[in-house]
Image (cartoon, rainbow, N blue to C red; front, side, top):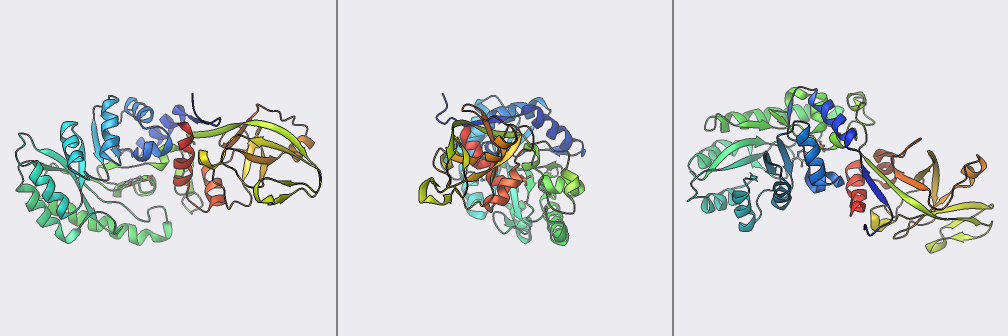
Length: 371
Ligand SMILES: *Cc1c(COP(=O)(O)O)cnc(C)c1O
């Protein structure tokens, strides 16, 4: 039995729809299922994607990759955080996982541990084209290629880099410059590894510049039905995506709050007139953030109602006075939707704007309620 009363549903029909929409770009995909598939559940999401024709997946840690293998995913898995220790390196070998190699110390250690292997371990080489996070400098790629070519235990299978601003149309020049540097790095590595496959684009790149995405695009957010281009001049490119995560919680109680009373911790809300309140069984322990969120809404019977007072650990209060005035008879046990659901649904972008964050964090947080 789950420990919380809230409920996270993952709509696999919508996941299939989004996959088909992204596949329609004509690019081969290596979907990103890191961080438990952005909170949607690693192994279930992987199974749906595999059934939809996906034969490459990118996870974060080697441990996630091993979990995928144990669940029966048989095709190529890349671990985007690389092999962080010898245990990871041994697991990559044992489970046929492609680790990312992004710096000289990591390359040297892998060359040592794999030196005596009978069959080369495939690696994904990461180069830094402008994110300044992980990756070899583009200028070093010729030396990286030579070093790898000199290691019989290793084989460069992929070249990767990550775009910093593909979701910001006004930053196109930066994205194009990153793609150009990626092309240079690819030439250097291909001189030694002609079979090398290239992987650059995330969802935003795939939707707007599929030509820059490389041989294997790496969409994450779009698969989960959130449009990374929301609010930009290119929002239309992702308009067909359908949200995959839906989060609800039961109404625990419906109570009058007489004028003059205060509600919840810190007495931050005072009823100016008589109000009707629904107490909903979700809180910050379930990833429903405590704030600051001046105008968060929860959807009951398809109609939005404002959250009032402080969000608590496992409870949140909603002012349903207006809903009752419209004739909606909200009762204990009714399902209150904090994300998605029927009617005028609250979206991941709505919550992100309320919480001062991005929809990626919203779905990762709320996905924890699946446990
Ligand atoms: C998370 C991630 C992606 C996916 O990006 P989206 O914006 O979710 O499509 C692609 N590549 C790397 C390296 C990532 O870390």
